[in-house]
Length: 379
Image 1 (tube, rainbow, N blue to C red):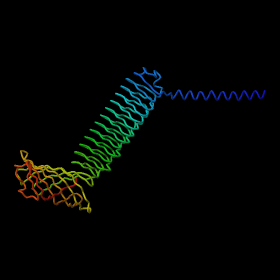
Image 2: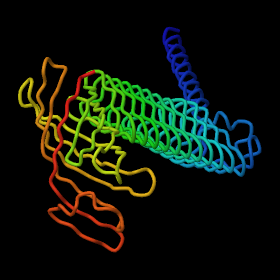
Image 3: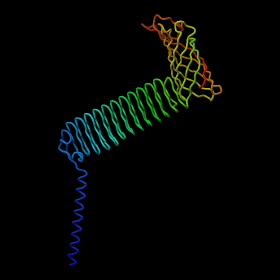
Image 4: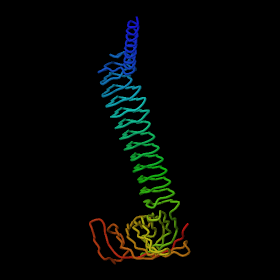
């Protein structure tokens, strides 16, 4: 009887273990149902039918729209692909790719790629790419939006990210931290940035590299801004008066960081009747020698005209020793090397005093040495 009892007990344990093992396998299979292929017209008119949202596919192709739990390799839809979990490999849709969690590989959509989780690889969309994070490249005709962009964001209009590496946009880039470069046709905005290049304006709190703007740079810290106007909190802003060898007297505004600065000026020529009004823009660099003494290297372009017919274009390179008094008032004076260009038939405002002169078919060009002297005050 004892032998029968133990035999029955062992048989019961083995059967229970077998039933439990089969249950585990069945439950696992139920949660990860996989199909080699999913072909259809639109959900639920497909080979997976109404079960499609619970199934994983290695290959999917739909005339209009497809729905699945997960895509492992390739999915092509005429309008949209909806993946409720993860997508791996390639997703191509005429309008929309939507992945509920993460995606890695390539997503190509005529209008929108929307990845709620992490997107690794490349996203290409005719209008927009939206993801929780991006590790790779986002390329969109209009905009890319993500929290973390590790790689490239390229958009026809705007990119937005909390933290980004490289952003290139036709109009605007917006990021809290930009680790590499922001390049925009109009504006870049960041809290901390490495390099910003914009057609019109850059705005940042701290810039560790270079700011290049067609008009204005704004930052709290930026030592290397390149723009006509640079409003840098820890930099310099100076307004002054200068006179050059042609008797052009200008009011100048110099603004920038501790190293680079921009120059803009306007004035009047009291000597020559044919070039009375003068406009000037340029770029300069400070070379510190001692606390009160430094050398300012400048390159400028000037337009001189009577505002009626004649226009004279002058470009100059200047070496200007400068001395500060009480850290507010600065005197400067130094030589310049100049290039003057004007149309044939205009009056020679240099009276033929050149180091070199060339009379071309339409223009006259000449090189000569000059000088400038001035005073400015720190604002």
